[in-house]
Image (cartoon, rainbow over all chains, first blue to last red; front, top):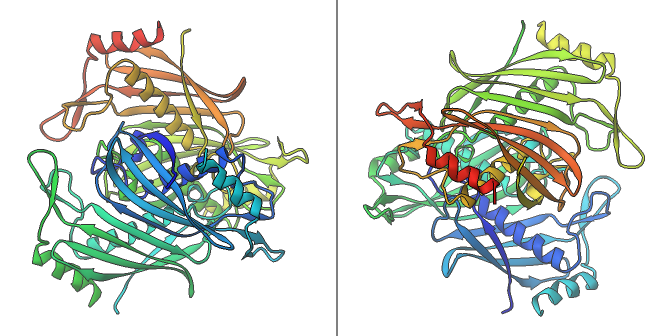
Length: 137
Length: 137
Length: 137
Length: 137
């Protein structure tokens, strides 16, 4: 399965009193990796005045080993599944060959309604094809 | 099932450019609620020089509705399952009667090894009973 | 000088690898305390679709002693100075009688321009008087 | 004055409900830039079991313009002043040629005491010369 690799270093503010990266940070690392895919596709996942957005509906992470201050690591990302209005991203966080953890984040394409609410909508085909193209380079 | 309720208000720094609480924050809210249970049990989940700790091995959240700046909300927490060395905490985040989302966090009791590593260990019975007592008050 | 007191407990995610609250968190604590004053005044410092906002133009903190996980602390806040378009808030962070640190945050009242920019404007007198009233209760 | 440049991109979780980087984040950006200098000097500012550490005693930032999601920016860092036991770092955050803001962070070299406290100490000369060497490359 083709994956896109996002590289990062652990910053001090991301560690906690136990001397390792706080578990909530891995959800931010997964989001950063996903957003890097959007940029490589020439797309923006967020624009302040658009009628659409991509809220998350589900997120999961399994923690295998700790990351520590100054560790360099990679997030290996794939598009795990695409439905009419959702994309599930699958991520493996690695330090070299060592798997630190694995997770998924599912986002839904929504249109903003006049009453301030949102409603899921069909993802434009061009978006899916541009995202997929990143993985076949 | 008995639950413990933790009350909180959304702070501005917890919101993101989409005008709602960033999805990674819900993992922090679940942790805050769990730690409130430990305090009510008269226990500490973290002490800097102890030979044990409670790293997380798995975390999950399903997002139903957004939380926004200044929203007051509650986290309803229960001990979903206890094994020899793990506790799975289950959480419902609510704003009034509206369910914002639901999630679980699984923590493992470990002993610190001389080589800097960690190894899962049997949770002391007193810890489990003191935590359980919080839910039967 | 009259002060408003905001009470808080240190959460685990706010600590860093040195076992104390990360220094950047104190700027969030000061903001939380300021926003509590706005709420007590019956005002909102932020509304998503308003034509005004309150960006910060300067922030400072002097760190005297560390805060640690689970510490309960207070932020004692006063309106240090008010100009045509700015308010400088002054804060003392205390754990009991022990001063943890002191800081200031200056915010400017701005109008949003049609071109997406912002311009400082005269603070409505009613806002200043409602904020001041909180300190004379 | 020679400066070291640290490059970074704004991540979504760093923005707030006003659609710009939360003001507390600039203190993290300054710390990341300082730590990059330490790495380039072949030094570590933090080691978990060492007898010394570098807590911050003062931090300041003046905000000129906002940073937004996906903005690429640079932090230009210099050693502004060095005393017996402190280093004051001075930072300019820029997006291209546009100054976003300027700030300083002062850190103190301390030894950990047997009673759990800390005491300021003379910075080893080798540390200062290795840090200075980064700026003369």
